[in-house]
Every structure is written in C-alpha cells, then in structure tokens.
Length: 102
Ligand code: HEC
Image (cartoon, rainbow, N blue to C red; front, side, top):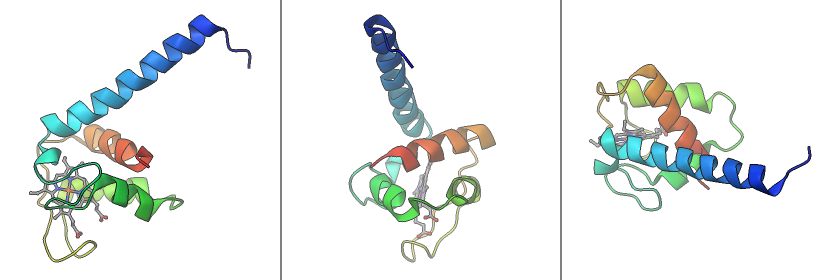
C-alpha cells in the first residue's frame, strides 16, 4: 500500500484520538478507580493484564464477560465487582484497549 504523507498524518492522528478516547472511557466508567495502566492499584496494572493474555485468542471474550460480571481469583483474593455501568460493547472496547497496551 502506498502511503502519502498527508494520509499517513491523518491516520496517525485518528489512531491517537482513538487511544485517547479509550483511556477517557476507562476513566468515565470508573475503571481507573481500581486500575492504572502501569501499576497495580486495587486491581492489576492493565499492562500486566495485556502481558498475561498475549496470544490467547479467547482472551477478549473471556475478559469482556469478566468486566461485565466481575470475579476473583486470577490476580488475588480481591474480587472485581460487576461493572453494571458498562454495556457489552463498551466492555469489549475497553478490553481491546487493555489488551493493546504493551
Ligand atoms: C472496585 C475495584 C475495581 C473496579 C471499579 C474495576 N476493577 Fe477490574 N479488577 C479489579 C480486581 C480486584 C481485579 C482482579 C480480579 C481477579 O483476581 O480475578 C480486576 C481485574 C480486571 C481485569 C483482568 C481480569 C482477569 O481475569 O484477568 C480486567 C481486564 C479488568 N479488571 C478491567 C476492568 C475494567 C475495564 C473496568 C471498568 C469498567 C474495571 N476493571 C473496574 C478491581 C476493579
């Protein structure tokens, strides 16, 4: 594919806007009350989650359900409560973003 500079610039700007939007969504949905990208808070660092599930193709489905319903026992005894404030689509968007963090 040929990449002209103006098109590349637009693509780059769009991509960074999308990343920002996902981080903002995580903040808006209160995920960041218990999580940080690079450090453990109440829940695991999102970068650690991404590293743990790298290469597992069912991870996106599994983690989307976990975000929606909550659960415990993977990272420790502290449970994540169900996140009733997010829709299925929002949970999937957030999980995709988390899994893209490296
Ligand atoms: C009240 C605190 C709290 C909130 C709010 C919270 N989490 Fe969590 N989260 C946790 C804890 C604790 C764990 C570890 C659970 C475990 O060990 O199984 C966790 C685990 C996770 C995992 C990894 C699950 C696994 O099985 O490996 C993901 C992904 C995640 N959270 C995403 C989110 C997203 C997205 C939101 C916002 C919609 C969110 N969390 C909100 C506390 C929270």
